[in-house]
View 1 (cartoon, chains in turn green, blue):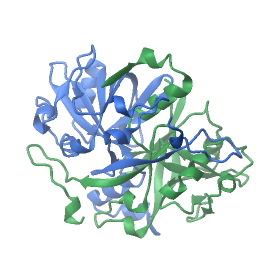
View 2 (cartoon, rainbow over the protein chains, first blue to last red):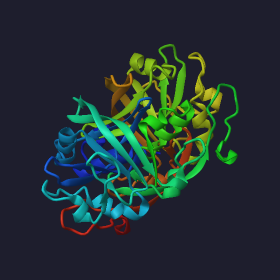
View 3 (cartoon, one colour):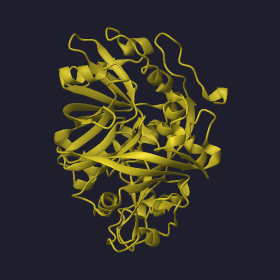
Length: 215
Length: 215
């Protein structure tokens, strides 16, 4: 095993430190967040910090870095109250990554990276057409994380759209059946495959697989 | 495509709603958090909400549900100020899942699920011996998420321990070379494999792969 300490990575170049610290916490979700500006310009940007917060009510969170990236996504969410979360499938990874380029606010990334938008709900906010799982989300609150001046956005999930074949009888969505990817670090796109699912764990009881029961 | 709305999943059974909402935001990190109680009992518990927060300073966050799970992890972190984050490799998934069972505070999950602990730093906090990537973390702050009474823990990463062979020249840790898993929903453990890495994205410039350049 190799060991790197805080004082050691503080002396690394910026990009080396970014690579190390971004990859050391594990795999991240890979999503495109879709928004629309008040004057009607659609925006789409890749995020790897979307995280489940709770099921009842259905809430998710994600982290915004106002000092680093242009704030199109944040400004649009604050102005309209809505955004979409669209899973990235394997065939979309180059286009998804390209949305992280700094395009001007008047330019739609949908056009620039050749992703098609679609409108699936009553709200005027764009979904990514090719995405196999997409959520309509409503902004609820934000918490400023004072330690590094980031913003933790809290949102309610209002609708879930997904490919029929990934839904199990117990309402688990099997993401690998739609080739949904995960992110390793800043820029590594990975394709997961299911290994096993386990029953609810109880003390002093053998861990049981439920994947083989055809849930 | 199938569509499920908020009012529809509110009428599902609790476990069906948990499965749906937990799997709809994408893949999650798979980590074991190790702590020690003030009276010396080691604790280890599986978490899927550990998320990168920033690289300078090196920060991560994770979500605690005080109303749902016993608070051993939280109590120990508050009492000692330290915890470890240990990536789950494919061969450890059944043991890792079993740590989510409600063992009494006086019982060490390490013994119950047969995971070995080890001490790698000057701080008296247990790491998981078999884990291929492990972080020493120091508690910094917490934010109560009022919308669902959860707690967002903010911590500084102080040390990173990892298998030598997963480190690239540019300090990217290639997690699939150590068979690190990701989580799909509540209980699905998945093995990702790298598809591609891309260069920093610039407007009006073709997305470039860097994986083939041997970074």
